[in-house]
Length: 67
Image (cartoon, rainbow, N blue to C red):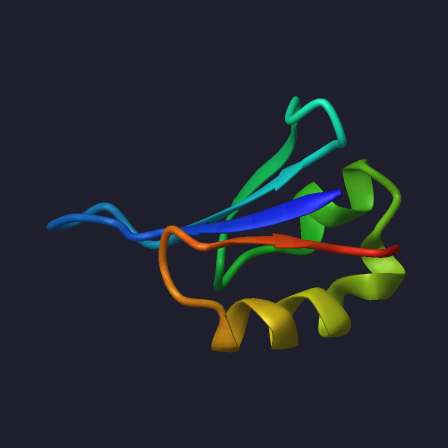
């Protein structure tokens, strides 16, 4: 699984994308509202871990997750 942080512009907020090994989009959520998206794909229990990674991740950088 891969994680990507996307910079918002003007009134559009910053978002996070979670993608699988084939780079198919699994989840797309605002950084400040991850609950529903992570629960939907079964990663609700990993929310704190994912948000800590996102906090330090630069915009546009892709990071491979081993979850």
